[in-house]
Image (cartoon, rainbow, N blue to C red):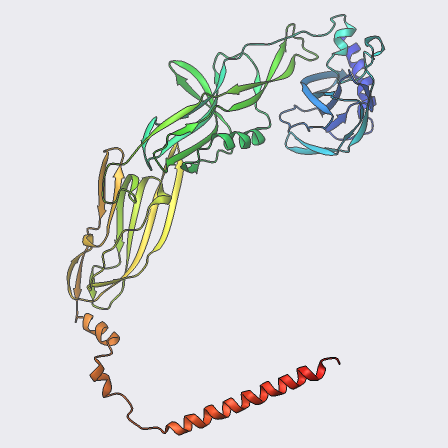
Length: 485
């Protein structure tokens, strides 16, 4: 009997709300007129499906958000069950007058739902006796509670066991040494307070403006999907939701500081006496703050290449087409540095120049992987070299690359192990002959000793001077002729 009465009640109300609409998801705006002391609402309604996700409610000039609440209703008519879920944002006016509600759209259950705007007139405060107790089907009251004499539901705030935390993989690093910073929201396994993220894109943009240090190179891990993973801290179980993660490489010895940042979460109050029908929780907001963090940065040990040495744990992979060459024959050689560190900052080897080889500027290519809190990859330098003198050559004398290993706290050198065997005639003299024009006396033999008359050049110059004089006179004539009297 109770189910039947409730079904009839739902049918009467729902027919007036949905008669003109065929969609399963829609947005309902509040009344056209309210008092200054009354609330105005925007309701997102989902029929015959669950309300799984929804986008942010709009900010409206002249209204202030007070919070959201949820409702779920189920009806059984002639053996057919239908359901309805809704999320209602409550607004309170900040002034009297006409408030314009602009058109807007929201993403609900991965669907974009739009609604036209309207005008809302906010008048003088309305006395409590004049208020309509059934002013909206989606008001914070549950009409079924009133129907059965249960009155307004009472909600209580459940203490949460959760925190926002910024952790780093190291507390002390050298200049150029990488460390990983992770901003996470942790929820204890024994937490009983229902919570969820909201408007995370906008919040994260504001957080990163405060969080990112200016004295570091950043490699962002670009977290796209926030998924919980179980972890244990001091023997206590948590679910970790990574919001942001990046590797940082200090550019100088100034400490790397991360300030405290806040993340606003939706936290639900729960009904003191929950029921199968009606509203069993009420949406509220709470901001969680991380603790500030500072990383000490040490200067690299003294070394002739201290200012340019890369920092990390690297190895060498080299390739050459052949190690048997003839003078004048070009060959490709690859010097590939791979390992863990700031791959972007790796510079090319400094090659000493001599008369044995011609070295051409390398083609550079890099490949970076960001995974599991680590940044690794390869930087390849592809050279072309041409031997000019026959002999055996250790390329390790030409291709050397110095770096600082923070694990061993020492400088190390990656050096080529390839030995080239070069045959053929010397090309060094050929290069000299092609570029040397010989002495002054040697060039005398090649100089034309035919005599030319200087009078011919004088006649040409005189003719050009006369032509220029005539042109200037003609121009002056045209200018003075056109001048008005």
